[in-house]
Length: 232
Image 1: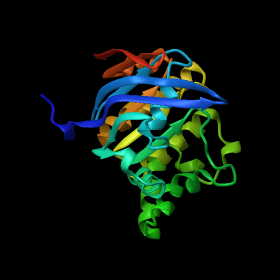
Image 2: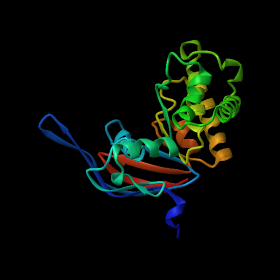
Image 3: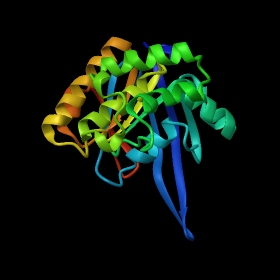
């Protein structure tokens, strides 16, 4: 039996309701699950199933309407907005399907940015940033801005940015959705290799069969409910 420290995430009867005008929409309808640490985990489900809502809860961007969400041992409902922001900066990296890079910054500056927010010293920032750019194969492109990079290169910058601070948890929302299949496969291979090397917990939401092929644990949700939870 696993103890609590072996789980990056624990959800207990979690519900999330949004108000759309005067209508309440129940996006998550009572999900309980445990996501193990240091694994490649994938959340699958059709559009509108609640995947993005679930990732927002895990990323401390939102809080549940009911139930308990624990991320890295922290009950997120207990955090103030400022504490949640600090917790995200310290513990969570994000990778998005549209890359979310800062267009006026170079690849180097985009990767360095989380370290600036954490007020890391200049020397440490430089060492960590260059090491991560080398790990994703973009040292020679460090001065390029996002509009000077291909989609695959931009996603590599986003991966480097997510991992540079050594987070306990990386959340990836459809990270290959805007890439062709060959580039998508190279990005998945890179993330899988870096997850193994850094022992970071990865949680993806995805429709991509290439992503699912690498999964060690799959959570299937539909209409805000957990339908399946299986080891692969």
